[in-house]
Amino acid sequence: MRKFLALALLLTLLPSAALAAGPVAVKIAVFDPTETLKNSEPGAEAIKQLEAKLKPERDRIDRQGKDFMKMQEDFQKQAFALAPDARQDKERELRRKEFELNEAVRMFQNAANREQSSKLAEIERVLGEVVRDYCAKNGVTFLMARLPGILYYAEPSTDVTKAVTLELNKAWHQRPKK
Image 1: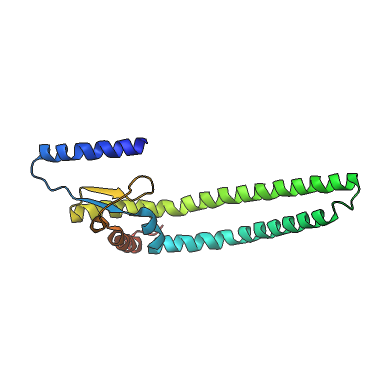
Image 2 (image 1 turned 45 degrees about the vertical axis):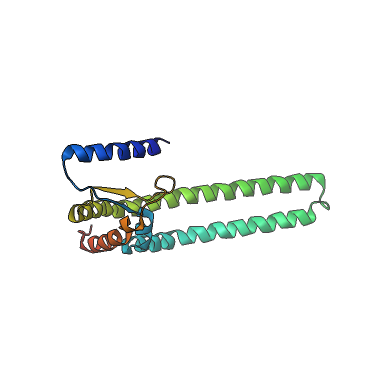
């Protein structure tokens, strides 16, 4: 709601600010940062590296999940034939395995989020520079991000996502390597 009110206030004050500054042309454009990251060379490279790094852990969790499902199916088949004490032991073991699986998934998700954040930090830094340069070169006064729930519609002719993506690719190859 705050973002909506801020956007509404900005759009309300924009015409008055333009009039106060004199006959200055205001050029508004939009771009989709998610699409830019997904379709750019650095974004594709980061996704590939992230998947390669996380694949062994993901495979381990998948195996652990399959083992748990098999254990659960075996228990359901044997449950009525087991003695009450044996059934309680199996149920306890199933709950423990389920907890371990849930904990492994949670830890994997946290690690994946940390890794993703570190991979995207450099790309977002370069993207910020690219956006500033693009706006300066093309006379864009306001560049708005097309994000779900924030920007519902923009005239397709104002969308500069492809141009920004191309500029990001160029800047990524020209950046100083660490």
